[in-house]
Amino acid sequence: MGEPAAQSAPLAGLTAIVTGAGRGLGRAEARELARLGANVVVNDFGQPGRDGSGEASAAPAEETAAGIRAAGGRATAHLGDVADFEQARALVQLAVDTYGQLDILVNNAGILRDRMVFSMSEDEWDTVIRVHLKGHFNTTHFAAIHWRERAKAAGGPVHGRIVNTSSEAFLAGSAGQPNYAAAKGGIVGLTTSTALALAKYGVTANAICPRARTRMTEDVFAGFQEPADGTLDVLAPEHVSPLVGYLASPAAAGVNGQLLVVHGGMVAIAERPRIAAKFDAPHEAFSFDELDAVLTPYYAARPPNETFAAAEVLGLKHG
Image 1 (tube, rainbow, N blue to C red):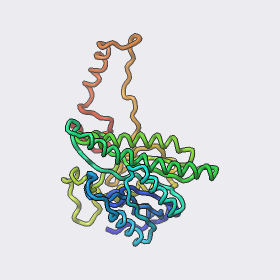
Image 2 (image 1 turned 90 degrees about the horizontal axis):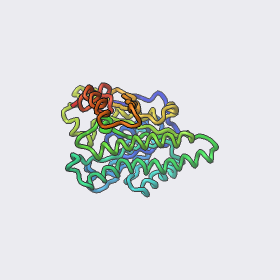
Image 3 (image 1 turned 120 degrees about the vertical axis):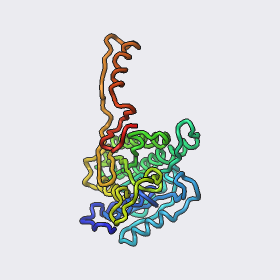
Image 4 (image 1 turned 45 degrees about the vertical axis):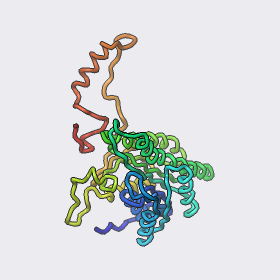
């Protein structure tokens, strides 16, 4: 299925970094940003295993960048591990050296090492937290320095956009992914903190929870068949990338510190946790019996296994 022609180029003259862009979601996002006019630095570590195993290779990043150039866009490939502080610095510097400045950062790179919490090793925990959470921090740190310096030199706000990748595993829980769910929750916290810190410089930071058929989700969506009639797969990454393009654009200047769920032609805006109920102690402090009297019946009346997620929005069922 061919891509629709762009009606405008809202990202013309802007430069973007997309991490983990050699395959899947990152590749679709890099292509969309280029289609909208951006220069794109395509980052990928190129390891063949979705658990981060195997030898690093420049081939996936080079292939995505070459495809963008073949379509008339501008793209540069970068082989690097964003969870390495100095390699993240070099990635941001490459964008600045190649295109003059950085305007958009899309953090997408990640791996999976799934295990139940009672079976997970220390290395399986540390590695996933490192790639997802530290990787998001590292690139954000150096991009933030760049934008702060530019804003000071300009004497006012600049165009800066961060789009981070969280997950419904954080929103609704994922029993076999305590490392991944924790990392994705941390990314939301990093995003909202960054949004507050950089707003005065003209920079926004938002997070998305995408659902798409990629190498990382091949087991999750194994039961969902791709359409045979040539129509766009409901789980295609191309359903996610337009939202990334919008959040990267000047049109989204008023969108900051937000969490959005996106898949299959749907975008849902997630609210921050709100107080669902409140109980006041009859005296200076609660006793055990007083807490038992108010909390036990309250939770008994709620659905079993209820999480923070809006299940009706996410299309999930209580287990």
